Image 1: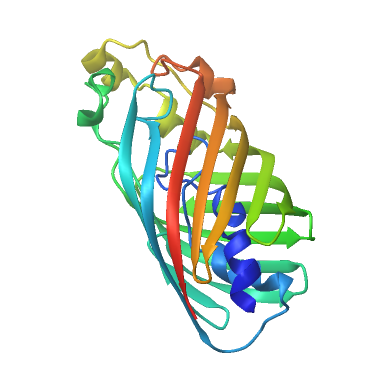
Image 2: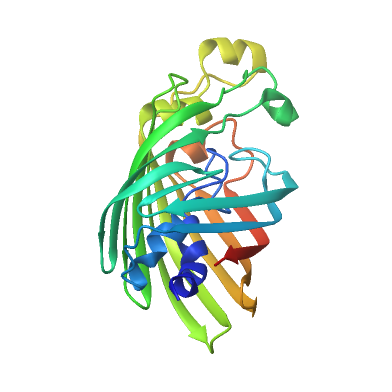
Length: 272
């Protein structure tokens, strides 16, 4: 069944993309996974696919925060042929071959609210924006690698991000699977300045020293997780990402804690 490996691979493909644009490490869900995972089945049929799920996630209040929030997560996916849409955005796999997917996506880039944390007082809000990007996913039975680039096309100074992730996977029987692997995030100077820099105006309002953030790797991470098929159409997923802010992201006066963690657990129902 095409959904068999789709369900198993859904989290691998979701992990490199954060649920919020702040990239605290690894995202809970995005909509690349279910469609891209069909590479294992060589399925190119023009047919509908649906998935619905929800759970809980924990992550820092903002990139570099030492405080965490726990919040509900929701996953909705619909796909038809190479096209897919959900809360993470809408996209298309424009090249599909056994073990390889290349595609494009448009998604909503989350901002940063000054009211989220007292430490952000005086820095102002980073507004939401529209992101356009490309992705490539390569998979074998035991390894999945993905590179994704996203650029702000909504004019809110989110800049450009490139994410690279690799996940090894193995199964213990038909019901349980495990995955683990490293990842890196690179941001251009505009992205890093928006989320880690401090302008002279922000410095005067917040009390932070002015800080100019340049382009470079901002995040190195490692993720472990598991999934469990507890019923024919149901899957339970859980994961933990430990990440380390590096470069100008680590040196930013906004950053309280360089070590960042993200965890989630979620149940997903696959409509056949």
